[in-house]
Length: 406
Ligand code: HEC
Ligand SMILES: [Cu+2]
Image (tube, rainbow, N blue to C red; front, side):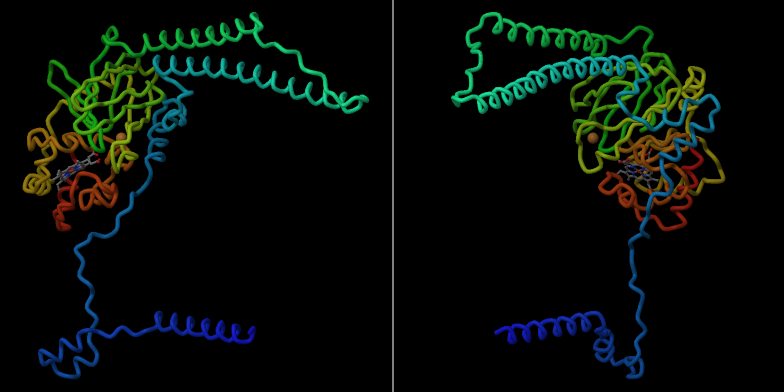
């Protein structure tokens, strides 16, 4: 019996080897011979057909060049007055830089401390009970008659019943009161004094920021600038589904709901870049819906706002790219002040003044921008911008044009 099984195994292994060799080395017969014969091509051509390259409309595979984290480190290091590098990237709730996030941190410390005390007390009683139980059993085992002593019965003890009703009630009451106090400070319904209103609109999967003002509205995307020390009254709206605005070092989460306006506020304590993230699952590219808040000195902020208010740069040397933008569907989806007024995608009037594209996760440079315009779905699969299949000269032209839009 054993011999037969062995033989079958050998045959199986051998046939597998042969099959795999055949699969790997099997010569692919060109189809041209049949087709060529049918249209009557000379025989010698059929014998050695040239293998034609497979024509492909697909653009080359793109990957993101560089990383935003490295870029942020450089951005902050370049500035002599900048806070330490960790200030740029860390999004932890335990490093608050704004009053609401500080209150949230303090509240969570308090809740955590109370929970630790409860944990220690309850576990302490448990350990005491176990130790005493073991000791009682040992004593009972040693004594002649094998009856362990009955523990003290406390059923119906009024003082104990009162204690374990009153103490937890007090704890819950304290937690409720401190939570309400925190909510009263951070979940307000009227703008804080001296605040500046900014509108944030969530889109799948990017952010629009609008700065209303008497001198005209400034519209930008994904990178929000605010002056240090001034409360920002943030009006939250959504263009499609529910999103959530969350910059942990500045404020708690607040949802952006279609057809309903929410408000939240924060006030950056110091200059720096604060990172955030959409915190409500909103579809395929939810994870790449990042928020960048730049807290500038008030004077720098005013300069930024004035620059953003200007119409787009018109530079004759990149006129070809400007024409490409205007001739293709770009203009239906994007606003460039003075050229187009599409509203579906980010406002590009001052694109080149931003550090990132694609909602905060692709460093903005010429290579990444060109790759993005050629086929955004390779860098951000599923995003709502189609590839317009521009040919390379058009692609270069429109990229150069957009790079001038400071
Ligand atoms: C159907 C609408 C649509 C068309 C057409 C379109 N875009 Fe977009 N575009 C978008 C959307 C939506 C985004 C945001 C994608 C994201 O981040 O998820 C975007 C993002 C961009 C960005 C990045 C902006 C930023 O701040 O992140 C650039 C640059 C851009 N588009 C350029 C172009 C150019 C150039 C064309 C024409 C060749 C074009 N777009 C055509 C919808 C469109
Ligand atoms: Cu989201």
